[in-house]
Amino acid sequence: MGVLTHDEILREIDAGRIEVDPFDATCVGPGSVDLHLGHDFRVFKKLHMIYHVDDVANFEDITELLRVEDFFVLMPGETVLGITQERLRLPSDICGRLEGRSRYARLGLMVHITAGFMQPGINNRQVLEISNVSSVPLALHPGTRLCQFVFDRTEGQAEYRGRFADQARP
Image 1 (cartoon, rainbow, N blue to C red):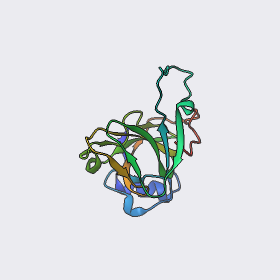
Image 2 (cartoon, rainbow, N blue to C red):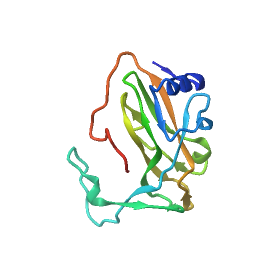
Image 3 (tube, rainbow, N blue to C red):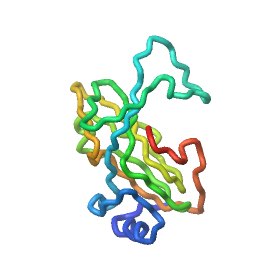
Image 4 (cartoon, rainbow, N blue to C red):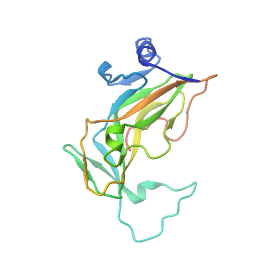
């Protein structure tokens, strides 16, 4: 397994094996592709009860979907789910990792706090688990290059067909 570099990413995109939609070639870096924050957010309701986290938990009953045109204010200590503007489609021999960008980490913004591994064969928009660990409110603007996707070539082939295979919103 190895990380795809700039030229290899472009070769895979040109060959149609990797799709980034919409695609902007200026977002391809030395070893990743920058992705933009979308307009949809899933926010957690303020509850005064215990919520059980188990294998059957469905977080839709403790969250609400919000569409933001201008910006979303994330308060210190809060977590919100966002989503990328781009849809990624990977072939069965390429997987990857969603990573934050250091320029925002330095502000105390954690762009993807866990579950950053993306399976081979995905075809969806990427959900961002965004947390503000700073001491000040942070305004999140849709369209910002908030994260990056690092591509890895696999040994063998596989395809993800799980619960989030066709995910289009957070």
